[in-house]
Image 1 (cartoon, rainbow, N blue to C red):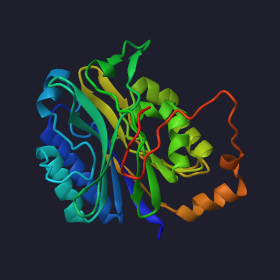
Image 2 (cartoon, one colour):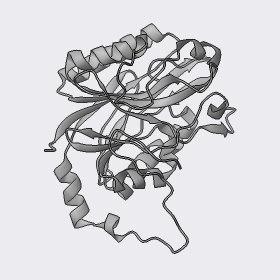
Image 3 (tube, one colour):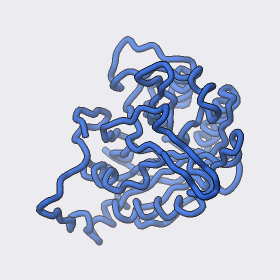
Image 4 (cartoon, rainbow, N blue to C red):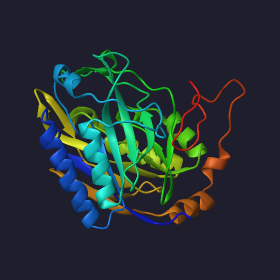
Length: 299
């Protein structure tokens, strides 16, 4: 049975030092657990933010699906599996640097680890961040990253969680698909740039929460990482009415709140907008079907 569950979203500032980043993530995860969190979500690129030439050296393999047997984790994943097991929590790695289709390519992968230290779900980021901003920021995620092609949900004590990463937040059809598959909460672990974050981060999170009538769980990167790369921060949890329940300001920390499935059902009963959706005659569903923790169809 589903139940209200204390949940934390972490805010940190990753650098090119993997050891320092993992130590920070472990410290904040332990602090959140001490504050009652049963679920802790880390931001995108929690283990490394630095030059692509250095990232290639820390990429680790993941199995094709979470239920793979005989898989041997790399050192970063092994530490995360141990952390989840030692604390007895659900741990979501918001953006894991997975080895891609070639030695110089990667996948940006959201990983759900259960309290038993086992993999529960894997989601590869669908939408890749290729932008040229007026402030001089130029990012080409697609140059080195293989996109995913599947929507993924996973089971939590509060119910179904829909997985996404950062730039996905700008594509509402993904979240509608996740809700259609039972999600009552959605996660968007991110490293939003300082420019786009200041303009759009809170607006997009609250919009997705309102239109999907779901909680938004948004761990985030903040601050100066390396070179000119800076992130907005403001990790937050938004309720299905669009109200911010808790939010980080500057610095390392976490936002924490109870995710209550009854609150979702109340709002969906009182304002049943999800049941009022209509589809035009020439439209089609854009996302594939797949079960919790699995993904079986192409876009």
